[in-house]
Length: 405
Length: 217
Image (cartoon, rainbow over all chains, first blue to last red):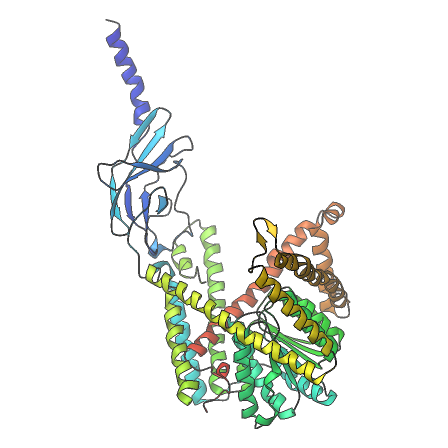
């Protein structure tokens, strides 16, 4: 007589507690977008009931009937899609919804082309509820859609460069702003000639796979032509044998182009060592013993920059540096007579040779910079307005300008 | 000869440049494998190129010794050190440690190479001091601004400075995060545009000076 009402009472009291754990809504498993395969993504709707003491477990199996294996566990109020995680055209779930990426691991290898079955368990205290079982198959992708904006920008910039080159071919008189460091090249070589001392040219610490090293070798070609005309001695110590081989060819061709093939010396380019401080010590020794009248530091540099330039400054040489290593720029500016900052290093070839086609690309770069400056102003304005009016509508535009690497 | 010296390198540059520019946008394993293979090939080529470097260093110093140019004694020291390292390296099988015990090669590295490298690196501290002295002489308005900024940043970054002048911490943060970052980003944007433009010029064969010469010959 007493048992039945008690059971009914317990049922009524217990019902709201059981109903308090809803099954995850909108749960889906899908192949991870824009990846190399061997991973799956899980998405489900966020719930106002998500909280720290409610735990979500991810279980996966390679057959619909199991056995399922637990792969992850986390509080239900975590793993949300946050603004900035994905651009809007490549997001697997809405911002604010849950997103979990499952990558292949020794615990559970995920193979491409094979279906997997995933379900979620939501647990709070002694109560728990399972989601539906979702099926997904992993596959590698052939295009990273998240980088689509990057590709469009690169193609557009290439188009602008080509158009600028075509315009420069039609009208070769493109004005260039004065770059003091490059104007001083002639002066430095002349000074070396008058003093009867060699010119020291360094191409930096990078290999031929670095754009700054290529820029340094291109400038070396122009410097070597002037050196050949002045009949001065040129010394180019190297850290990389491949760069040395390339520079040998460049210097040789420059002497030929200057009409002085007889003045070319095979050992003007020579290898020292690939070790950073051994190279620095050797070059410092050359500076102190042979006292070059002009030192050129082009390319990328690390901690050796100040050791080289300070030694050069102590010998009284005229020093011209050009680097894209922004951390080393203060050292170069402090110790060198002239410094080509960042992009000036890449503009040097066009500036020294004055070839219309090369000069045309500088105008293309200026268009690119003008575009980026406009985007910075527009993006700052939109982001500010978005914060002021508390709206995320501008994120669609701002996403277009993100992730340019 | 022109085909081998000019057209073939330009064709290789174009094909490889375009392929690996697009590789950045392709996450497929085939694409990943291609970049891994190319990296391995680059390492192999670098290994062979080292022979060029060794030939160069032997030649330059042999000439110095033969002609007895000033400082030729250093070239003998170089030859002796190089040969000693090669002999010891071969005898130790190229290993610095065998069964936890240091080999002769390891001793040579730990007790000559490492201290020499450390010495060179430590000289940097003195060079920074002398360069800072030159840079911070307030001879112009710009140098004065640099001097004041540097003093503030130094005070804000050391415990004693923060203890004496606590407000320098906020000023330092503002200088680094606003003024310094703005200039640095401007430089980096310019560098990025320059790199893309130079890469395009090389891929499309517009910039050919790195092949030697400059214009078509």
